[in-house]
Length: 584
Ligand code: OXD
Ligand code: MN
Image (cartoon, rainbow, N blue to C red; front, side, top):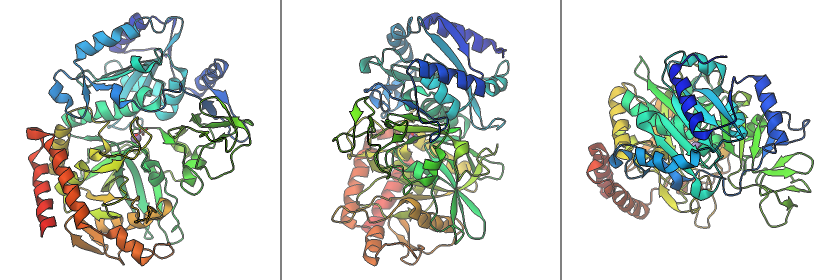
């Protein structure tokens, strides 16, 4: 395998000139290479083996204890002007950022190997796929990227002699929190990441390329790169309705994408296309087509069980990587909420001896599995379709103990954009920050939008003009609680009942009532046979509390006011419409 691309050759030479590795290794992505690198990673302690009978092809990794989540405070968008990064991103001047971080990269790979990984985001041969190349000194990153992307020879072929690519410059550095930087240069298609081996910080094809850099490219080129799962909901007539859904990190995107239907016998089921990222393009038919740029799942382990997500559990039984879960003494893995008895003895994510009931978590709350998409039992036959799948519904959502009903439908595209722009969620462990605090997270893109958030919202509004048959836009909330703090909705597999209503609504069917916030199902509009939701609970689930919404509106206003003149007019119009509907 030889590089034919002069630009790539020059860039590799430049990276090596800075980092000064002993060796440069070009990854071909083959199974033979994977086996060889895994052997080396085991020998050097990067990975630990697991029981080959029970967990064939699986490996265990324990990260640096301070390197367990994305670090938004150390993540920067480096555009020429501060304005273009917008008010929600950390910004640094590109030249200053490079000057500051360059000393950390200088000689950082001395005595080590620099791995060069060409990768494709998106199916091979799709007109919508894109190439990136990441250099790294981390075997964990290489072995993970082979699962998460189409890595190696195919990418190099796609690159040819002169195709553009995103340059990902990564090193573990010294893993000290104060020497950690995740820098994006959207105007140069470049990413510099040092000091972290964590997925979202280090597997540069994922958040850095497919969301932050891609969102910027998408705005300039007329498409969309979104933090969304993609699924197909099959109804009894065999028709599959494709939906894309944006929830903030660790709000159940993976669970929804792999939903195990309790109504299979009645003909309702879900087909998985993707669980985290969607690239959306307007097709020649005027519809919005979505594809999953990723090749793997990087999911939160704790809480994943045969009850909550049997399909995820089945996906990770082989050829998967486990990071920061509990390592059992007999080579098994375990995490809190797995709903099986823990091993009698093991090593926790920090590397300490662990026994059940010793008072500490065996797995870090953001511990993860990395698994090939192809192993998912509910995998859609269309998941690698070069055109993607046609999207009929976009769903926004988050964790809200109060306020948001189980589901509602926006009046039109622009109202849907407003719903997405003002969505909020109670914070989880996927990012550093205080768990439980409500944070507003437009389209779940707050940590992932590679440019000014107002330009992003304007782009959404513009896209409405470009899509002659736009998807309908919905909001869901699986997390509403009663006065005693108990969840009102069973969630997980039962969410199919909500998807079924959404699918009907996309066909202008499904019973609904008009409310100030949008259409909500009538009490008999949802299929509730066989689910344990009382009449009273249903009423609370669908309730729109005027006092709560008044408070919410005040918060919208305060949030939107932060954007000043930059806020697109279309958003303010929707705010005013909502105010007047709620006043009536
Ligand atoms: C993720 C995240 O890892 O959103 O997908 O944090
Ligand atoms: Mn995510």
